[in-house]
Each structure stands twice: as C-alpha cells, then as structure tokens.
Image (tube, rainbow, N blue to C red):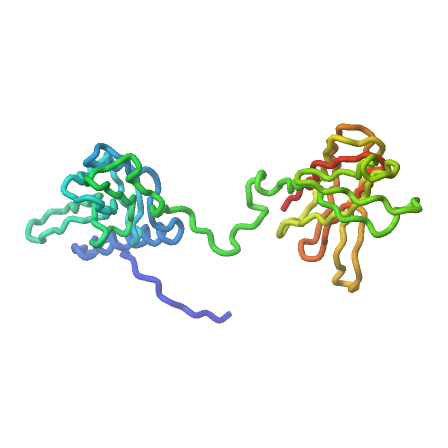
Length: 326
C-alpha cells in the first residue's frame, strides 16, 4: 500500500519530569482555539447563531438583544446582556450598520497577568465607514435624524447554520414529510384521436375551463349526451422513485367515469417504447372523490405518466393528484 504523508500541525505532548515554559502553554491554547475555529467555520459557517436581534428602543437609539454569533474567523461571540446603541449624534438620512465584533485585550508581559479577557463589541458604522463583517442590521434615519418604526432592515443579516457537503444528504435522509408529497393539478386533457376499446366512435373532447374540465353540454352542442374523453400527461418531479396513490375528484358524473393510468416512456435496455397499465377503475357516483393505491417503482430517468379518462355522460373533473415519494 502506497502512502503520501502531509503534516497538519503539531500539538503539545507532555511527559513526566518535563520542563514547561509559557510557550508550551500558549501552544496548547492555540491548538484548541484553532481547532474550535475550524470546526465552527467548516461545519456551521459564520454569522448569527441565535438572538442578537436589533429593535427600536427610542427615536434616538436601537437595542441589540442577547445572543450568540460566530465571526468570519470562526471565533465565538457571546453577548450576555442587551446593549443600547445611541444614534443621537448622527444626521438626517444617515445609513448606519449595526454589527458585532470579537475583541481580545492586549496584555503587557511585564504585568505578569495570567488572564486575558475577551469581549463582544457592538458597533455602529456609517455607510461610508468600514463596518463589522458580522452585520446585524441596517438602520436608516429619517429626515430629522430619528429612528422610525420601519427604519431597521435585517434582510442582509448573515446567519450561521449547518454546512452540508455535496452528496452527503440523500432523499432517504429527509424527514418523512419531505420524502412523500402530492402533486395536485386541474384536469387538462387533450382530445383522443381514436375510439376506446369496445367503442365504435371517438368520445367528444372535454371543454377545459380555468379550474375544471367539463363534457360538452348536449343542449348547446346539438347532440345527445355522449360524455367526453381525453388524455393528459402527468409531470414526474425530479428524482422521485415511487408512485404511491392516485386521486380524482369532481362534482358531476351522470353516467360512468372510466380511469386508466399508464407508465410510459422508454426502455433503454431493449431500445423500445415502454407502456404499462398502473390503474384501471370506474366511478358511478356524484359528487366523487376517490383515492386508489398504485405502488409503482418509477424510473426517474426514463418513465413518464399519463392518464386516459372517459365519461360516458355529463362529466366534470375538478382535481387530479398523484402521490410520489423519494
């Protein structure tokens, strides 16, 4: 087995009787600080984690609520108490960026102090000034230099969150409610170009409205009630693996509605057209709302879905729906 070795970094190692100096302890601190920052940036990103909301306190000030954030270097910033930021010294129409920064105090080695304080610093910068990278909100003062109720804009606030690597989350890992869903649509058929099995003539085309499809009215069509027939394609959402159920609903059915659901498409192995009947049902009631199990494993690359529907007499179809799952 061939190996190529590359150094990451060194960390302190201790043994009995070792002489430790301040540099050893600083190296220990730096190792853990750097590891924590890498973890924050690579797994969570940087920005507001929670809290740190900016709200109007008065016409001259805003208030930042307690919260927690990560800066652009991966350092954690904890604001334990709310902070009031006065904007009374700013002029009319001034645009102010409210931000948050991490700060460490500088120590003089001569003081021999063994504690270094860190701070959460709330900043207020004019638009023309350099602002804190961790932006919390933008405040626009009115023509009198005051903070109105609608002065605070948080649309540019950056939030930290889980960073997901490419290919690390698949459909199988989604929540159950996200793995299954209904595709619902109005019935939008096109006319059949041939008679259905057992019939001598083609059924009239459905008349398509904005929310429903209806067979021709015999009184206006000048003919007997022949119902209607039609077919429509059902779009298959990307990457779905299963057709679970089929649903149809409507208000009118003076005779019988005959439903046929097909899987079509292409068979890439034998290079032939694919057609498979998934459902054959009939409805003899009105109004109607029927749901049928299908349970068909669909190929997301090559399968299509289509519906053929015939109403023997006056028919209105309001809803077509298919339940898919990943």
